[in-house]
Image (cartoon, rainbow, N blue to C red; front, side, top):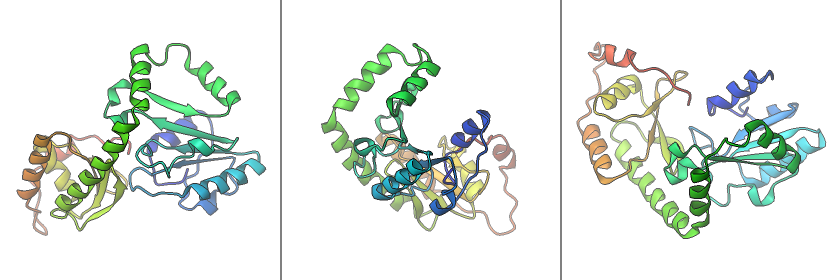
Length: 255
């Protein structure tokens, strides 16, 4: 796994009986049988150029290995995807719900060589995805005009959120057009404070200074976040937070 990244990939591979090693450099993955890359990465937005991925795929092809690329956040960037250039030993994973805001549809895709795709289909069974979900997905994916307009709008949203987050952090560390990652010494306190105002952000057990903010949706959501951030007052050094019980009630979720 090229990490740090989305936690469930490692969990799933270990559950299947594989030895999983997280590396922070592509060169450290050279001896692996399978390399899993999230591109753009969650949560920091790390981006690997298409040509680099094609060269990686060629390397693993020569070694009879596999490259798995999770493109869950690649819909708004045609330069990020390998779909039109897919090497024979590459599996591409795509998520539908993030870009289209329909996570409850539980729809995703694996784009793979025919033999692998057939094995995945057999493992999932005939009823893994509902008919309405498939139909909605077909219609949405064909609507290129909406996707282009949405991509432009989300870029503006990301800039707007970055400007807002400057009040609680020194700036965004990264992210994609759908979420932003910030780092602050007051991460745990800010997480609890926002939660009490009905605003959920993602925190990380491995580094409590990091918080991931999704883009607000309708206008009232932007207003609520803006008001909460304007009223945020960081705790003084040495001050004991009064919201310890609130913080302890939040359970850690995978990134």
